[in-house]
Every structure is written in structure tokens, then in C-alpha cells.
Length: 101
Image (cartoon, rainbow, N blue to C red; front, top):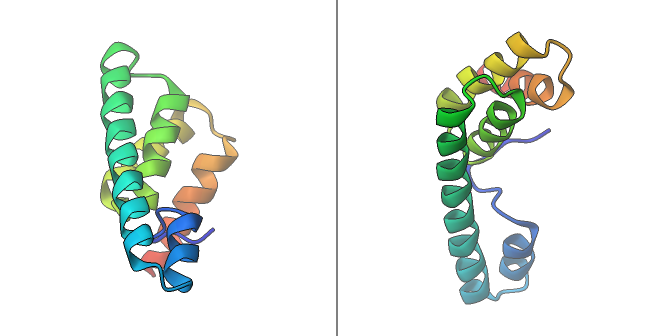
């Protein structure tokens, strides 16, 4: 699993590869807005259900994909504390740790 701060969408990369920079920029801007909205919603949900593993997992994955790994790590660790064998959280956390080495 590759985690980069620029991996917002396949469409943006494809448009950029085809030379359509304006379309790529528009798609990236929309993706950023959606990721920001998702983060806000997950954070709100955690105020209601602070021990919900799926919320922590999803928030951790979104943060990691945005390159915000230091923010993602506590959420991914919380998932594994609650559900030790959760594969998505484990894979994402392992990818982060591999990149840090």
C-alpha cells in the first residue's frame, strides 16, 4: 500500500498525464474538499462514539492518505486496541511505519 499526500484521485493523475492540468487541478480541489468534509464528520462522530473502531479506522486511513501520518497513527492504534486483527488499520499502520524507516 502506497501512501502519499498527493494520491487524491486516479482521475486527477490521468487528467494530468493527458496534459489537462485544469481538469486535474479541479479534481484535486474537489477531492481535498471531500476529504476535509470526511475528516470533520469522523471527528464529530467520535465525539458521540469515541470507542467506535470503524470511525477511528476510517479517519486514520483518510489522514494517512493525505500524508497526515502523525495524526493518523493514534486512530489506527486505537482500532487495533479495540479490534486487534482489523486488517485495514494494521496494513495502513504498517505502511506508515515502513515509510518512517
